[in-house]
Amino acid sequence: MPNLLELDEVEARYGPVQALRGVSLTVDEGEVVSVLGANGAGKTTTLRAISGTVSRSGTIELSGKALKGGPEAAARAGVAHVPEGRGTFVELTVTENLRLGAYARRDRTIKDDIKRVSEYFPWMLERGGQRAGTLSGGEQQMLALARALMSRPRLLLLDEPSLGLAPMIVREFFRTVRHLNENEGLTVLVVEQDARIALASSARAYVLEVGRVALTGSSAELQGDENVRRSYLGY
Amino acid sequence: MLAATFADFMQQVVSGLASGGIYAALALALVIIHRSTGVINFSQGEMATLCTYIAWTLTVNHGWSYWPAFVATLGFSFVFGVATHRVVIRPVERGNVLRVVIVTIGLLIAINGFVVWQWSGEPQALQSPFGTDTIDIGGVVISWQDVGTILVTLGIVVLLWLLFQFTKLGLALRAAAVNPEEARLVGVRVTWMLALGWGLAAVLGAVAGMLTAPSVGLDPQMMQPILIYAFAAAVLGGIDSPFGAVVGGLTLGVMLNVIGVYVDFVGAELKLPVALLVILVVLLVRPSGIFGRPEVKRV
Image (tube, rainbow over all chains, first blue to last red; front, side):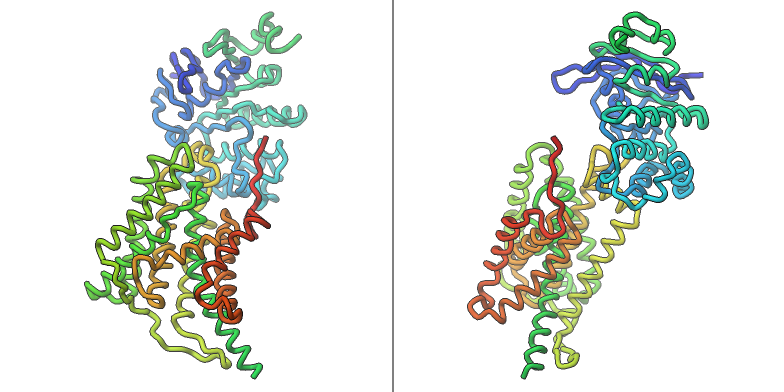
């Protein structure tokens, strides 16, 4: 069985600046995988390469089929990308954000899905008419996750979900992600600055350094690795 | 005496609402494009004039009656608006806003030149679909032209509101306008949505043009003052607020009409400067307009 996601020697650049210098990684169906690294190591760019929001070369395959074109095509192929800094439409309401999450789908079970997704976030049903911009940071991050779920993604990409959130909210967010992974078999590739929570939530991890994979292994192995501990866990 | 005065006043209000409906339609076109492309489309008035000439050609040269010509012109204007975005605006859209603004000014000149070349500068008459009859409601004499203008503009505005508020396409149009990067991530084809926005704006302009022509006469400069009024209406209501554009248009229409009649020295001649004064005062006192939200820049 092929991997759900496979990146082989992927390079990407912003104008003259090369951000990825040949990244290869795989994510299996039903797996949570994290990507760690310092600022500028290429974590965000890796996700952007997968969803097609940066021009890239090398091969990126989803279930053995090449992902080509822009983010519209990636969304249609089943990739849901929650970008850094909350991925919500702040001027639109909670319900409208959820409806947009299902935009790329063709079936008409959106109402059922809003109910299903809201089971994880009960407050969203009651506050469906509220503008997303008036939600708290944590609520917006939850809404971004809920919106991604509305697309029934085959692969969820999360970019720095902990950014700017209180530790308690971060834990709640990752608890929900693990829950979705265990209950619904959701496959997740998460980029995180907070290595501790990322390793605690994922089965495997990749460590990026200046646009290349420097280290990879199971999260337990990496937690025990002297260098990882010193560089990313800080003890 | 007093009753007659009140009836006069109401007459001015109703005919002000009719002009205001036209300003509102064109202001709404400006707002739709400003929200999606981020610029004021200076050629909005000329695009409307061109479309009105299409309607005129269909009725006069091809013997169509008004309403079929009206609908056909709406179809033409939609395609024209979409094509304008795809061919002229899209190549310059990335980067400096000023470039797009200059391109729309270029379009204004080009379309005006084309209209004069094609139809000459001679004023033409577009028949009124509502006739010249009037009705008398409790001493207030209202022309069917005014009633029809109000109903058609309101009808179009309501249809657009339904589209934007209750359909998947409308939601995608709004998403593409407020946050294009995010919209692409959920699978919205943003460049097409922007083009559709230009198409809808052109339709609104065509409606404004076809309702203006029967009362003021059709000539290549017809929509230029209307565009100034539409600017004033959009600024008054808030340049990013569709609802504000409609309220701003109606308010301005009534205000100008009443001032024109009751303030002696203004008359018909000084209406345009009054509109410019409105723009100036609003920009000084409340730059975001009545219904606009002040722009907040995140640090």
